[in-house]
Length: 399
Ligand SMILES: [Zn+2]
Image 1 (cartoon, rainbow, N blue to C red):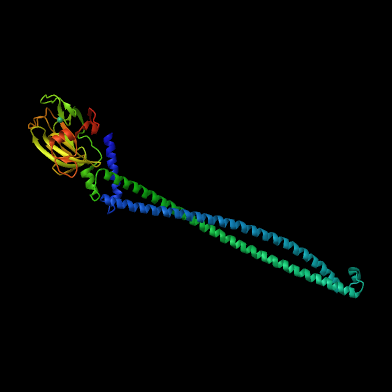
Image 2: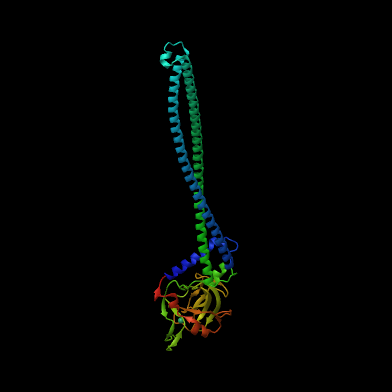
C-alpha cells in the first residue's frame, strides 16, 4: 500500500512535468520558477479580463433595462397623444356642429326669407346686419378653432409616429444589447475556463517545484536527470517477495555463533539464487564489491530522498547487473540473489538470501555533504532499520 502511494506520487510528479516540459525554459528548477511566474502573470491578466467582461455584461444589462424603461415611457406618451387626439376630435365634431348650425342660419339670412325677423328676432334691418356680422364672426372663430384643433391633431399624430419610430429604435437597441450580452457571456465563460486551466497549471507547477526542492534538485540541474538519478521520495522493497530471516540490531551470529553480534541490515530469504534484486529507490550506483569472502558480490546505490542522502546496499549477490556510476530507478535490477551453493566464494552466508542495508549519507564516495568511506561507520553508525523504513511485514508476495 505504501509503495502504491509512493508510486502514485511519483507518477503524479511525472505527469505534472508533461505540460511544463513542452516549454523550452522548464528543464530546470529555475526555468520552472520562471514558468510559474509567467503563469501567475497570465492568471492575473485573465482575472482582470474576467472582471472587465463582467462589468461589460452588467453595463449591457443596464442598457437593456434603461431602453425598456424608455419604451414604457414612450408608450405612455403614445397613449396620451391618442387620448388627446380623441378629445380633440370630439371638440372638432362639436365645433363643426356649431358651424353647421350657424351656416344654416347664414343661408337663411342670405336668401329671401320671410321668417328672417322671426328667426333672428331683429328689430330692424340694421340690427339684422349687426346680428349677421356677429354670426359671421362666430363662424370664423369656430373655423379658426377647428383649424387649431386640426393642427393639434396633426402634431399629436406626428408625435405618435415619432414615438412609434423611437420605440422601434429602442427595440433594435435592446436586440443589439442582448446579442452583445450573449457574446459577452460566451467570452466570460471562455475566460473563466482559461483561468481554471491556468489555475490547474499553476498548482501542478508549484507541486512539481516543491517536489524537486524536496528531493534536493539544484536550481540549474536538469529536472529529468535529477528526478531519475538523485531524487526520490521513499524506498521500496528490493524483492518482489520475501521473508525476514534476520532482523536489524544485535543478534547471535548465524555463522560464528557469537552472541550480541551486530547486524546492520535485514536478511531476506524465501527466494532461490538468481532471483532479481531491485534498487530500493532511484539513484546512482556508487560502489561495487566483487566476490568478497564475507558478503560476496555487493552493490551500493546512492540516493537523494527528499533532499536527504542515503546509501542502500545489496549483499551476497550471485550476479551484479549494474556498473559504477549508472543511474538506476527503483525498477532497475541491480543483481540477483546469491548466498547459496552458487556463490562458494562467500563464507558469510548459510543459504540464499539478501542482506539489505539502508544507511544515512553516501558511503564510498566524496561529496560536500554527508559522505564517508569508513565501512564501520556505514555498518554501525549510519545504518538504519530497513524493516522500519520499509514497514516490512514478516513475509510478502508483492513488491
Ligand atoms: Zn545479513
